[in-house]
Length: 290
Ligand code: MG
Image (cartoon, rainbow, N blue to C red; front, side, top):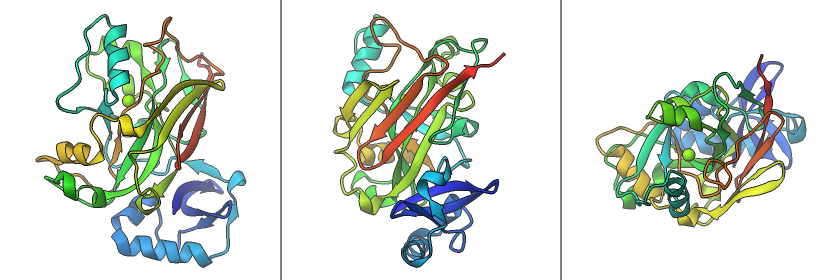
């Protein structure tokens, strides 16, 4: 099932996509987090309802928001989780490549989550080095701690796409990633959550990004250094994962700052992130704020 959060008459609502239309699921759950927390039973109800209820509106007329517009806690992210991206990042900084022994984990603020087609704010007074990072994100379906790799996959509710938009100048200035990864609008997400049953192998999906139609990243999730069971194992060691947690699994090579010469986004640029079977998100850099 493809689950969406969409806006109708100014109110955000839960829906499912069926035959090119949105079926409203408010009768089943008021919002995505409530649905996820209702577990397998809630999901089965949603599926049954989505199959039979009349569509509310055509998908192309729906205003889609991020599937989880306001997560309960920060979006967790893997850094340098593709070998080629680790190489390009160290090379761009004039350093020797080190493949991490443990996942590099950082977070993005809840307030930077934005819709799959929303404009990304641009303010040169804050940053002039806005970069793209196409990523597959995992949505956690149930609470877990000390999850063993072999038990990990049933904890996954579904998958979505995020663009881990990064202000590279702030990322460097402030040492830790948090600030440079958390500007408003720098976590476009969606267009929907595809439930785990529809993605039998999330480690075999093409992942690409384009800027103004030009391909910048083209890889496959099979090249992740830490796969999903390994990520859930490391993150949940001594730390409880909750239903609705969002974990971005890292970006492949081809980001802007590591290119020769470096490239950054500018007002009017259109950046697209695509993951096979999950869809595409498309965001335009807004005119500069004055
Ligand atoms: Mg990233």
